[in-house]
Amino acid sequence: MTRFLDRVPSGSGYIALCFVCRVVEATGGSMAMNSAYAILTSTLPDDVGRAVGFLQTTGGMGLVNRSSIGSCSLQYKVPITDGNILTLLKIPGCSILYLLILCCGLSLSFLDPTFSPFIKENFPQISTPQIGLLFAIAPGVFGIVSPIVGYISDRWLQGVQCIIGFILLAIGFCLLGPNPWLAEYIPTSVPETVIALVLIGIGASGVQSPSYTLICRMARNRGLPENLQTFGLVSGLFTSAFSLGSFLGPTLAGYLVKQYEFAWSSSVCGLINISAGLILTIYMSVMKIQKNWPLPIPKEMKQVGEDET
Image 1 (cartoon, rainbow, N blue to C red):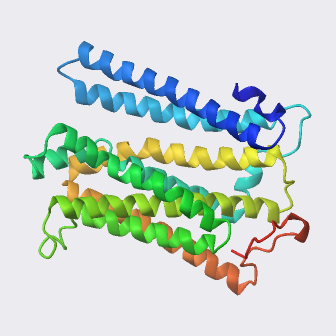
Image 2 (cartoon, rainbow, N blue to C red):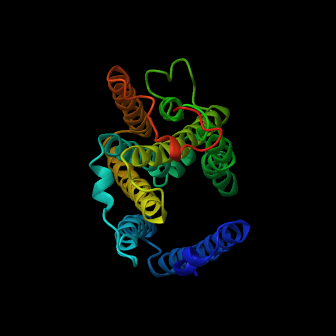
């Protein structure tokens, strides 16, 4: 179905078919993953943790390859057009945003292999369904806040939104342990954990939508045509970075928790996010000194009501 979406006229019908395709894709993916987990659990009852770890690793590899292959194949659509994903990576700002989106994906997947043992160790009174609810807080908040952030990012300071998002991610991960330096003042508790997860969800949404908008603006500013091929390259760059981060997150988390305790591990993730925000701040400052920020967009490409970044 997705293969023929570019043949559908623009409008509400196109948007509806996009939703249908994504729903069908998500349904099939969830059915496959649920079956895979069930088969692994019944086949390897004594090595469930290791088996699930390998399953997440291979799933992450698939996400990385999906984005890379999809973005590369889109450029060969007839009629063949010039440019590929390297065209975007040659733009310094896009390369920086690639790393920042990777950090965001890493943050959202960081808790997958480590959060459940942390909860069971610190809150033994919490039942399994309640643990599931805790797992749903960050992605749930992310899903609720993302449309709002996306609406704002079309009209206001995308770079500043990304920086604020990284700051919230850093605070959330430092509170999640909490950081051993903060443990004396902030004891580990369920409300404190919930607040940390909410901040992580808000922070991740504050990075994702504005960063995608920024990549689009950078591509347009460099003269890339505003067409399906360019948007496909932007989407491929974005999803490739996020998927690579989603693949690296559980791997890094598993290694850090094995070497150190969860509190220090989550603090390292917080440090990664604050470093990402600092890198973006430095880049924006240098560009502003060179009078290249906010990003100048050709007048014919500006949307009605669009403000400067």
